[in-house]
View 1: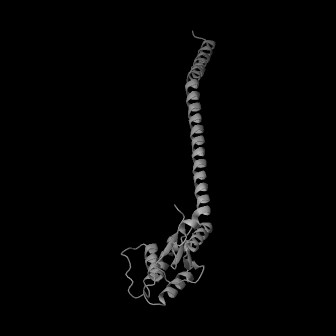
View 2: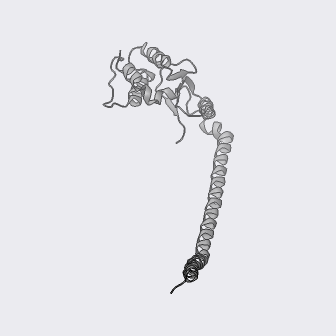
View 3: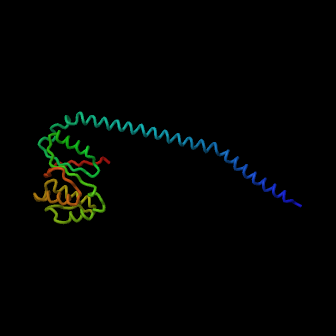
Amino acid sequence: MISFRYHLVSIIAVFLAVALGIVIGTTALNGPITTDLRNQVNTLKNDRTNLAQQVKSLQGQVNNADAFADTFGSSVVAGTLSKQSVLVVTMPGASSTTRDGVLHEITAAGGKIAGNIALTPNYIDQRRSSDIISLVTTDQPNGLTLPLTNDPAALGAALLSYVLLGKGNATDLTQVVSAFAQLHMLSVESNVVPSTNVVIVGTGT
């Protein structure tokens, strides 16, 4: 007859065998897993170091380009815009430093600033699309042909470019610019007169 002690010893033996198997399995796998993780960490560290070096190199190139432009920019462009007017339109997100640099170079080239307009984030806000469409499709300047698109930004650009280039009636430019300004979609930094030369200042992205 099998005693209770025999059953107890058998159960304990089974648990010991299971525990021993887990320990042996973990020990056997621990080496390869640890080595693989260590290799992955080292690879990521190397990638980070390489990327940091690339960023430093690119920043150095940008700084060199800025230094060259500051030193020789005015001399290079001198006289290239003599007796010409230039409109400057700044896109949303473009820095004031970039815009001021462009204005400086235009002046250095002998050009006259015909106007300095800055589009606001409202102009590209999808929630304001209906406002642009309503403006563009109401009281259009004579001769304006809108592009076949439903894109409000493109429609607004078509209207603005038409009057900024001096097309339509003499009063159209003031009316259109004022209408966009009332919608808080652009701000006028200086008096605007039509010009066939327009510079767009963007974010570079």
